Amino acid sequence: MLPPNKIPLGQLAKEEGISVATLAKWRAEARAKGQFLPDANAGPEGWTSEDKLAAVIETASLNEAELGEYCRRRGIYLEQLVVWREACARANDWERAATSRIARETRDDKKRIQQLERELARKEKALAEAAALMILRKKAEAIWGPEGGAEE
Image (cartoon, rainbow, N blue to C red; front, side, top):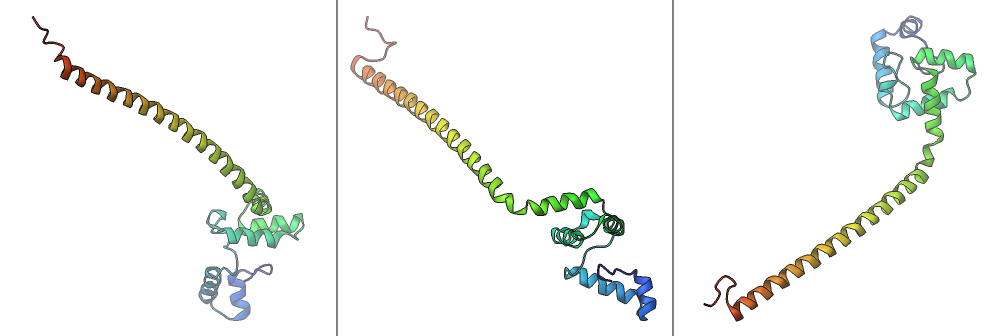
């Protein structure tokens, strides 16, 4: 049941004298423990990252014909396996990409903060000016009286 000597359940059941249901249960338990990959019926969409890594490792030493057979047996395309290999090869490059992305975001955030601080300072000055004008108006009214009530 385990790769690379994968034997169909029916054939293995006849050879070993164990029921297909028992073998299927054992296979499901092994998959749950992460001991081997999903079968072709699951399709690559249901594969976890660990499954994909295991497939890349299993196929690393296969020649082209064996690789084609492996892909057919697993229900995957060779292109998918190539993409998984490239992803495994780039797995440790995330730090460099993440660092540059974080630096760019930090730089953008700093620019935005400076812009907002300038806008806030401008609005605070305008508010202080408006408050000063209101205070002056109140003082002028207290000294000379309201504007509308001209002395006659």
